[in-house]
Length: 231
Ligand SMILES: NC(=O)c1ccc[n+]([C@@H]2O[C@H](COP(=O)([O-])OP(=O)(O)OC[C@H]3O[C@@H](n4cnc5c(N)ncnc54)[C@H](OP(=O)(O)O)[C@@H]3O)[C@@H](O)[C@H]2O)c1
Image (cartoon, rainbow, N blue to C red; front, side):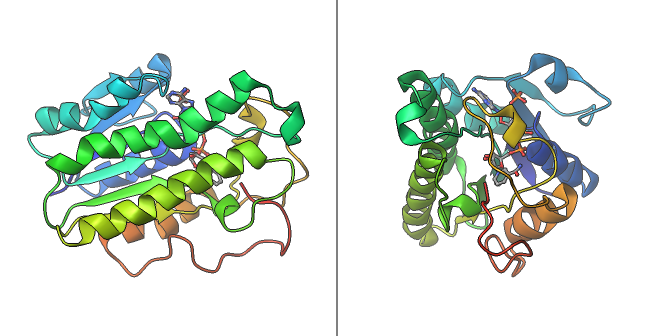
């Protein structure tokens, strides 16, 4: 049985991952910002330990894995699916929004993983959601793309560092999904985006399969409109 921490369990991707892992028999610890959604037993499995956190509290982010390991007895999987979009030309993004985008999309996921690594042993795996934006950053998303690209670079190095310990680090470069993520942007309005992929299928293919060690596709060839912006 796996023991999994899902950070961002209150979101579309995190919720799908948490419910699927729970259905598969994993022990799951849930972390999310929105206390109401986190507590909602019709949304997230009933029998899971829960903890509220905010990405701006980086020390708190670092304590999530130790909390999950204490709650579940051990920890061998971590899923990080926190993020927020932001749109607009670079000169139109104010300091507060720029800091917000870098904190939620890069510094907080890094802090969660930093807190988890000392607890993970051989065979453990970490999956962190970045996005296709890393491969093709479009105009009008400089800050969001920069944060995701920083996270992806960090994960790549950490993955190489952890290989000798037998800990896998998966950079999950999801395509644009249906689900309203772009509409919840902290600043600006989204450009015209291609039709989003089905979230459940994308989470299965790009997150859960590689997390389980299957030769899945965290960022392999994806359907979509060539040249269309991706998040
Ligand atoms: N959806 C897409 O099209 C798409 C495409 C590529 C990559 N991604 C990436 O996939 C990840 C999940 O996206 P999603 O579609 O599931 O979006 P979502 O439904 O909006 O979920 C975002 C998650 O991030 C959490 N979050 C946002 N700000 C936070 C903060 N300040 N402190 C703590 N948690 C915070 C939200 O918490 P609350 O709900 O509790 O506030 C929620 O759990 C993100 O990293 C996103 O960049 C998404």
